[in-house]
Image (cartoon, rainbow, N blue to C red; front, side):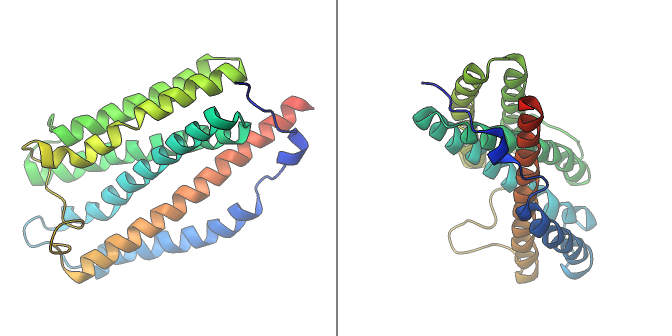
Length: 233
């Protein structure tokens, strides 16, 4: 399989119309989410104010999983077609996914300390998220190590596909093993196990962080294309 190289001139779109439209929508949504999480959502009776980290922690995890699902799909498309644009999408999405996984690993301990009494435990879900972070750090390291574009695209695609296997393990870990991490409260039989206001803020947070993911993904792809243009000049 050979990786198709797009003409650099066809890729010249920085910052790009999509980025210009997404940016104000994302910023406005983020501001509204902060207000809703801090002032509108009711305080949890057991956990108190630290529970409000939930509205950042869970959307960060959702976006990380979304980002790595995009890496998975783009990697399959790259191996099937050899088109370079899929490698660009996979690389950009992996970078954004690592950022949000880092956010998960930071906000989780901040929430855990007042709730569990410790910042970290080798809970199955925490451990599997940490492994996911290491997998995609390795993915980015592999991309920086291989200078040949065709080999880099193929090898990275394989790792991007294999690494995604950890995502369903993370999701199912609280069902498979007894752990400190709480069980799901949204996608459960009988409906969400939380007040309506909390659920509304969570859903809005998921939508907001999805917008943020799309914005960052678009920016990273535009930056990659700008580098191609400079390299071809």
